[in-house]
Image 1 (cartoon, chains in turn red, brown):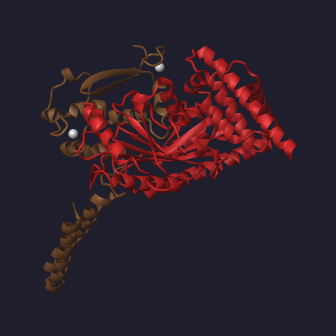
Image 2 (cartoon, chains in turn blue, green; image 1 turned 45 degrees about the vertical axis):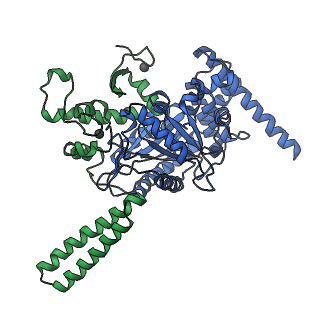
Image 3 (tube, chains in turn cyan, red; image 1 turned 135 degrees about the horizontal axis):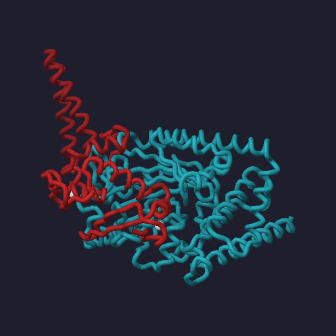
Length: 364
Length: 177
Ligand SMILES: [Zn+2]
Ligand SMILES: [Zn+2]
């Protein structure tokens, strides 16, 4: 395993397996914020303290948490080129904050990229576990085991009344943010999402677009997560979240069915036009690419489009962001050059997929 | 003022960050703020930050701190990290675990607003520190019970409870840090 692998592959290994309800839920994520009792939080550190934290982590966490997880690779932000940092952000393996603001920031990554433990971000530790599909419980179990492993080696900042002490009081208590990333094209198309979001907010959960805002989220990708971290147990938080997510899944599925029943030809037209654009365009902006990728993904999920693997769309969403485009080009690109490179990449990737499918067919 | 990120739209959000004791100001438009925040799945530094500073501002308006009378409590600073309440309202972050004690008086109303009325943790306990806390919680309950027994003049039960407390405390001192 090397830094090169983390940087060069757009799709994290965990993304290749689809997971439950993958026609709508792309991923589930648990994040724990943890701090060390005897050090000031990274925000106020004079660099020297962050360095001490990082150095002690290098020695203490140099072994595998357990056999299943394997050894974690430590990557220091200082050692990365700007494009490499951007790529890690685009893969959601590190936060923009770690890359831009941190002093002595680093990340521990597992080989399958399910686990990323950021060091010296806003908090000393940000333990993050990602799973494909709707798998909050599995992600929570994994995060708990990593948390126990870390706690066996360091003294956490913990207060019996306030729980895990975090730099930002919006995270105090469990320090946990649980979130589910969902693809909701039919709810957007039928304009139902605008009514659903306020109802979800009432339950102490937050909905936000993945790369855009409100209902204009790029690629119709939305994230639902808990706002409250204090006064509820971790299990209660994910059960509440899971309950809401299940309801949203139901609503999206029924909206898809209705669209198919009532406006099948319009839906087909929309999907195949998008596929046509992706397969043929020579210049494409990220917004249009995201929209088309969402349409094609919907086409695959409702069985209208065959012959394209869904994970390719996940791959293209990440691959066509600025950091990856420049990584692929091996040079920095201005926005106009990026739009050309993006179109080329998408065309080539879809063509490759066709070839692969064809040769698979020939073998049979 | 234009946005520092895109250089196009007007900056509508203004942040103050303290890095290494150096105050830096950050001006950004809503769209860029969202984009920046969204890049990390599950957290949105900016929107949560906004929410929080909104709440804090509600309590301590910081249009221009120099024109406001400085109250003593605003000057209160954390003995461990030196953060003042005034700085906290600006960056929306605490500087160390001790800050929670230092500013505890002002904290509960804020926590209530952010966490749906809750102020007390009821989730996971860390294994090592948590074992002691668990015992402490039990001892606390037993003490209350013992007082009740004494008031009800059930001295035998009170004595049993007292022994139980002693054995728990013994266990805590052996196993604890
Ligand atoms: Zn901007
Ligand atoms: Zn402090």
